[in-house]
Amino acid sequence: MKYVWICVFSFFSLFAADDIRVMGSGFCTMDLLVQVEDAFIEEHIVPGRGGNQEGTFELIDSVLAKVKRVPKVVPGGSAANTVRALARLGQPCAFLGHVGRDHWGEHFASHLEKHGVELRLKHAPFTSRVLCLISPDGQRSFLACDPRLDTIPDKSDFKDVKWIHLEARNLFNRAVFEKTVELARESAIPLSMDLSCCRTVKHFKEDLLRIIENDVDLLFCNEDEAALLLGLDPKAACYELQKRCTVAVVTLGKEGALIGHKDKVVSVPAYPTQVVDTTGAGDYFSAGFIYGYLRSLPLEECACIGHRLAKAVVAVIGTELAEESWEALRRQIIP
Image (cartoon, rainbow, N blue to C red; front, side, top):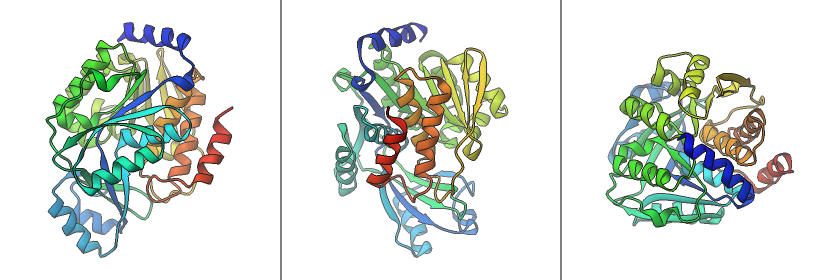
């Protein structure tokens, strides 16, 4: 991957950052968001508050019936959230994923397209759905139903792409994930990756360590994912991760983020805010960080841009910001 990183600097000299097409690769997910009490989560989600459980549509419907509230339905998925936010900042973006031939898939596709993301979608047996139960303090607990995929990407999906942002959750469809990484490597396209969720780390720890060391330039994870992956506290984990890739970022919620690079770890505090829902906070942080990174800004400044986006999204239910919020963010971020 060191060779690929040399290529990064060469293409920065050839392309303006505003011309760099970032392609996200991940699940096309419809999020069903509903606010509940912690006791309800402990009763219905394994392993409880903050958990991420695989389930079925029948189980999701059963839990929703017990909530007795109409959920807010929004397009989600970690990589999709990130490229959608990047597109709203004016970055050219595409998305590679799988949708079902159903109204959920149509909704997902039209939503991304509306926000300026070019679609490079393939078909799946059904569209992924995630029930997101939101605690009173904004913490999320998940019940997910994802399809198993048999349509893998090919080189044509990577046309005009200069950066790839991958969610590790794609490892649950290993053939798709590994082909994406392989094609990125063959095309010398730099790769950022988000560890996505603790369930992914638990299932694929050794795979993730190998991929981070061999193929990832820029890594994002939260402190819980870092602890599961390495068994270390956040700062020690960030230091170890930066040995395996070019830049490692460990987010700490309201405490900010740690950035590891060239054998150093620095802390960048978050902006104080009132949290309503933490859904999309990490994804939006990644979008802001990547936006600054593609413009060769100092890493601390990249994190500050990420914190601005995260602050905005945790103030609302879901990941959809009003146009005036985006206008304010663009004034703060874009010179």
